[in-house]
Amino acid sequence: MENVTFNSPILQLEGLVVSEQAVYPTFAFFLIFYVLIMVSNIGIILLITIERSLHEPMYILFCNLPFNDAFGNSVIVPRLLMDILTPTSERYISYTDCVAQAYGFHMYVAASHAVLMVMAFDRYNAICNPLRYTTIMTNKMVAKLTAFAWGGAIIFVGILLALTLRLNRCGTLIANLFCDNASLFKLSCENPYINNVYGLIYTAVVMGLSLGCIALTYGKITIVCLTSKSKTLNSKAFKTCSTHLAVYLIMCMSGLSMILLHRVSGQSDYRKGSLLLFHIGPGILNPVIYALQTTEIRHALLKILRIKRVMS
Image (cartoon, rainbow, N blue to C red):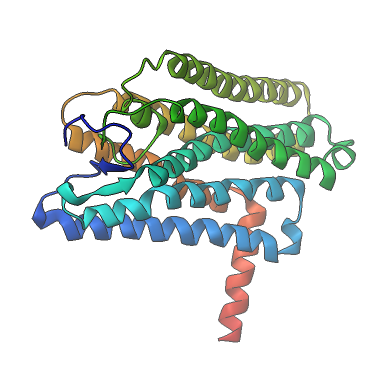
């Protein structure tokens, strides 16, 4: 479709291009991934909700992560599955739906950083201020941290998309797997200078706060562990912080890979396939890492499985 339509309410989404022979295997592959993501992440949320021993600030804050993974993948994967079964020339999406998908995608990315920042704050207080932990991490504080994580993402992403919505469009083709802010303002026939500037500021703020918070908290935690002679404290710090750090590194590597792949020209089908795997990968790996590494979650899960086995 040529870039000749002015502010068209209907856009064409390029999506994932696969051969006729690979349509159903590809559909089944991503459907299985999506089901695994939803079952594992919703399962973790239900486990923490049901098991009273997990009603602690660390696990309540952690609930935001599987919720965000389920939300982020629900924004992208169902539409992708529908497009796989639709001929490339018939993959249309309304401009409103495209903006909503872009908003959801960027909310997922921003909230991922924010949630891991508040989880780092919790770990810092648990290890560096153990005697004051219960007075600091009250239910009110947990609610404030959760509101900060989601509220900040809503505001920053809202501004990001609002700047794009003001632009007139003369393009209709979204040359991407899904709608995002960059794909939307590339449709514009106006100068997107303000969008580029705010996009750079937005990325710098999110990444700067994220990396700064993680570096600062883990730096202080490392100092406390090195100066402490308590093996119990060091063991607790290693178990909880290694899990959190592994999830953070997975998110950063996935995000960096998505940015780099978005700018690679040529081999677009392979690039888009890799892009999607980097998007859905953390959604599967995060609950597995926490289930295997966190003793309390693992014990609670085994407890429920034993009860079901006895009842059956």
